[in-house]
Image 1 (tube, rainbow, N blue to C red):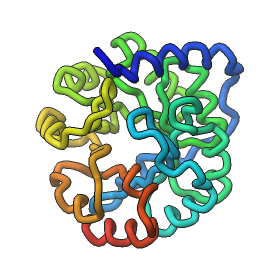
Image 2: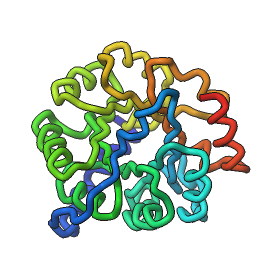
Image 3: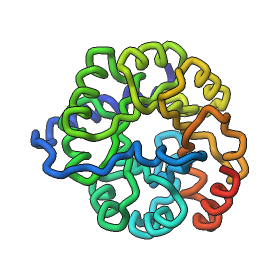
Length: 248
């Protein structure tokens, strides 16, 4: 497929993993799942500077500044750690951990346990396991690593076939991404696959929020909504989050 960003990202990710040291996490993580202990739609505020499809989003953004806003108005934080394609860094997680006790989801393209250990040591409370890039054996093995060290796994799906595969893992949290990872286009109808997911599994709606009022359109089955690009490009991120909270 033309403009298949995912293939290019994964090629680079394999090179990157070779330079990551293999070490077990040495800290006890907070629980990402604790945000679901109370009723109501939770807001996960994301920090990212660029994306492969859009290019620059907010290249000058400082994680310290945004985390202070997120800590007041969000329930959890999502941080892009991929360096080459999203201008992310594992150091962003470390800096965020110093500024907030909110649960942190470290978003990357995880294909190795070394990446999970690194995220846990940086202070992350959850990592993203993307069904699109993992076969069943890889998913099972990486989930087992998460369970062993006490970090939550958010399984990301984009289609019904991926839901079927992920449900075999006995997941606790599933994120439905309305953004196609091959060409990065957004289709909000993707959220309809929530019908395939049994009650008792926490659901996160990812991508597709353009304005605070869009939060009100999230189906009742969902427990949380992740807001990224719209928040990072907002003229007043604090006001955006406040209004999103009102519509949750």
